[in-house]
Image (cartoon, rainbow, N blue to C red; front, top):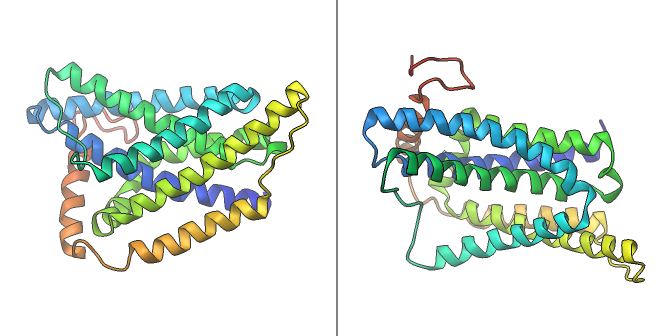
Length: 263
């Protein structure tokens, strides 16, 4: 394992942490209209759904790596996520909304949310790879690692990132700016691949040094700006996160901790 792979995995870990915190927050908020017993049952189905969707996402990654049109879709989808995030932030919608309707409406809606987060994870992993790594077993296992990190973090490691996002909400914006930069890289590589496939003679590349310099500047400067002033005290953030995590921990038959019926 060389330094470049370690940097890619570390970058994925940070992005997965922030996105997983978002995912955990969405799950906790959206099940609140259900009765307490049904909340636990709904979260159980969602946890199992998250695991299945991550596995499906990893399998999909093998195709995304190979075919330029899937990579083009990935670049556009990531760009859409960034635009949607900042558009929603500028509107009146605020945070995730509580769902209304039947138990199964909540379960299906939450699994669609999990599908979106799973796709985010896989696309970010694919986009971080160098073109020459795409058709290798190393590249595949890096994407697999990203998908597994996302699954584990939603369940176990999101507490730290939830607390960070509660105290410093602007960190969420930094994460999406990073995703936007990744989308640009993936888009440029798609154009290059199309040129090679159809012999168009275009030659557009984003040098590795430019990509990682951009990632470093966005993360560094964005992190400094986002943490200048805390929106909440550490004690308040601790209480907020405790309530969210408690809801997730009460999920019955959780596939990742082996407990039955919340015990």
